Length: 149
Image (tube, helix red, strand yellow):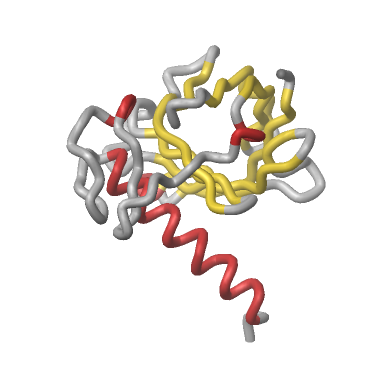
């Protein structure tokens, strides 16, 4: 049996992934604007702007599946990019959970999704990493990022 708190947390995480996927694919999500993903604000059905956690904005050294994958930058406009690879996309937070979508890299038509917890020193940690999923390749694993600035 899955503990109730875990069930709730994954339910919220799944909702974030669905919202983020819909926005990244240019879809209309509960009244979202039709502007390009890089400058489109995200709205919920009540019309309130979803605010990304200001504490998540910055530059990180990220580690995916145990390997140092260079630096990523999360910008205040809800976009992110990798300095070393072609990875880039949108990000959003709900409370302390962050979701990153990556639709620009790896030849994966379904995109990739990264989930983690926003903390004082980064996104998740080596001891409690977040998770990623590449659905097209049926590949998943853990990741975390250390905040540099």
